[in-house]
Image (cartoon, rainbow, N blue to C red; front, side, top):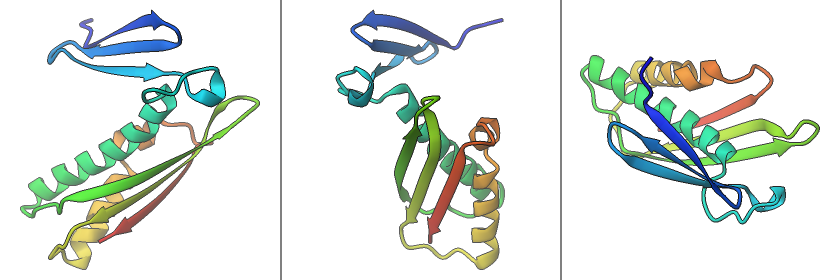
Length: 135
């Protein structure tokens, strides 16, 4: 089994994950509401961000396979935490697309593949995933 990510605990509630192929690194800090400094993404922030990144990536793949261009987008991500146990209880993602010439059928296809992305399918069924697509 080959490894693609190396993770190191750096102390002071900070980690560094390195993508071995590219040598790019991501730092995480514990959030301020959980004994941390909050100076970087928390691990749960990365989960919410990964969901959105996966959604837009598979939308891009869908557009390429169907010979149209996915408009540039900007998303707002809200992560809601609960306690007992401490976990992500809800992720709200609003994706706003720049001007586009997509047909209704193309937009429907993009929404369907986004909602079915691998990260969305990997998360607990208890996690509420709420999505808004503004084309």
